[in-house]
Image 1 (spheres, helix red, strand yellow):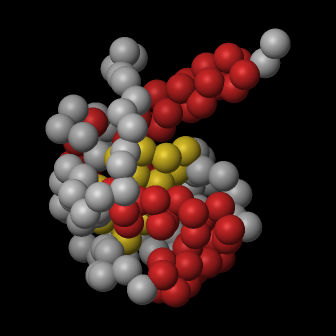
Image 2 (tube, one colour):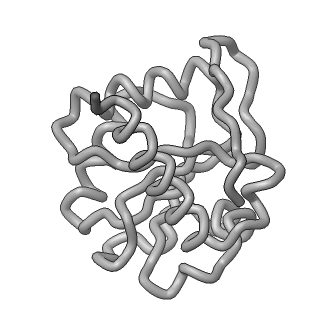
Length: 143
């Protein structure tokens, strides 16, 4: 899975790949509620939110983002890294979500967007890849 590349996202009305969804991993029930309020306050057109559970590590992202809205809500998944995977939203909405999240006071998650490649990855492999990418970027910033 390594060898992925980053692509700059503009702020256009072009939709990102996949069904419209926000896949939320590793958030406590209280933080799930804060995230729900944040997106509601933003006035986004309906954005289904799917909350992963401890047993979802082997499930492919493509299957997860197609679950019904609110699936897994209220469950706790402390064994999963805190991450948000966005799909099917516009580039402009992505920027709005990132800005609102930074201002929310919630702990920093790993971020990703669904791609034709990643939709076939099991959740646990994506989370491991995102964590490795974050560590590599942090190491590059150090002298």
